[in-house]
Structures are given as C-alpha cells and as structure tokens.
Image (cartoon, rainbow, N blue to C red; front, side, top):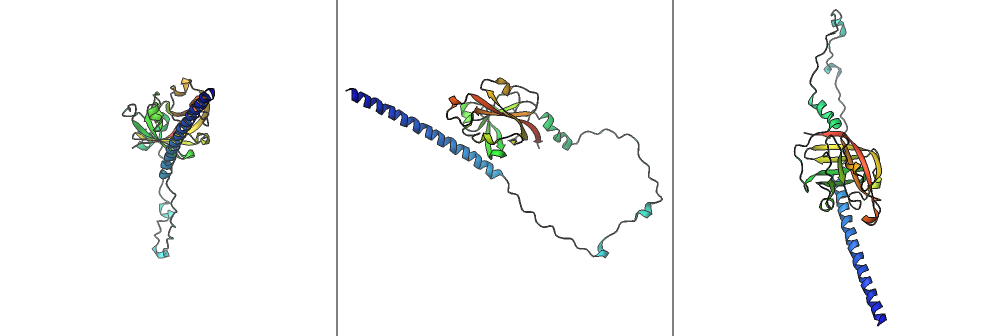
Length: 248
C-alpha cells in the first residue's frame, strides 16, 4: 500500500513537472516569435543604400563657354562698406524646428491608456517595437509601454518607456552609450542618443521622475538573462537625450 502511494505521488509530481515545463516552453516560444517579429519589422524599414550613378562629363567647345566681364571694367567704381546696424529678424521656420531638440514639443492630443502612440526603433539591436500608453500586462505583451510620466516622447521633460526583457529587450545588453533610439509618432519623429546606462532598484521612483530636460528613459527588468521574473529584482535604465525633432 505504501508503495502504491509513493508511486501515485511520484506520478502527480511528474505530471505537474511536465505540465509546468510545457507551459514555460510555450511561453518561451511565444515570446521568441514576438521578438523575432519586431526584429523583422526593423529590417524591413532599413533602406538599402543605392549605388550612385556616374556623373556624365560635360564637354564644351571653347567658343561655347561664356566668359563674364573682366574685373578691369569695375576698376573705377568706389565701393563703400555699409556700417549701419542690421535689423533683428524673426527666426525662420527652419531655425525654429532646429531648436526643438532643446525644448521639445507639446503633443496636441493626450493619448488614453491602451492606445498605440507610436513605434520605438533601436538600430543597434535591429528592433522596431510598438509603443502603447500604459505599462500594464496588456500593453507590455504587445510592445513597450509609456509610463505615466511628466512628458510624452518629444516633449521637454522625462518620457519613460518600459518593456519586457524576454521580448522587447532580449538583446538589450548590446545597447551602449552613443546608440540612437528613434520614436516615431503622429506628432513627429524624435531621435534620442543614449548618454547613460545604470542599474536601479525596482522601487526607485526617480527613474520616472521629472528632470526638466527633454530626455527618454527606457527600462527593463535586470538581469536581462534571468529565467523568471522573481529572479530579476532590479531594473536596467537607458537614458537618452533628445538630439533631433522632425515635425511637419
């Protein structure tokens, strides 16, 4: 009788183990497929560099070339320097846009939780990930989530994005200082450059706090290679500064 109970308990333990193994295998497979899909989207958007066409050589007969008047015709003209102060002019549209990376923009519409607000592209790890408003499980399973921070991407304060290490940032270790992070939205395209990387506690709220600077902070669980979330009690943070703003 005792042997039967032991066999029964052993069978139950074996069944639970196989079920758990199957569950984690399916979960890993799903996450792997999702990560590969985001990498595939990034590769589709990388334009190939066209081969420049040779510039035809312009051949002209000497008699076809028009020669301008010689300087000797103007030798009797007296030139005077204009010393009057120049009037201040309003900055051109191009100058105004060029300065936006220092101040950021203001979104015309504030997104609601669960809405897709754009795409995060990281050329260094060849990913293009959807950005959703909110950092709940629903949003993070579909991409990265915008934390309810003081600012949205492209604005003049801290914008924070969170993502799972198993999917969005499975190659996060390859991201280094100087790499670009590009956020594409209906409001504009915002290019950031990573300037700092550090490890923070999971409860460190300064990661998403206001800084008064147009920066982007992207974070994920650390270590990135942990098998289960319980073994990733910290957060890796990539901080990037806004370097370019492209708006219509």
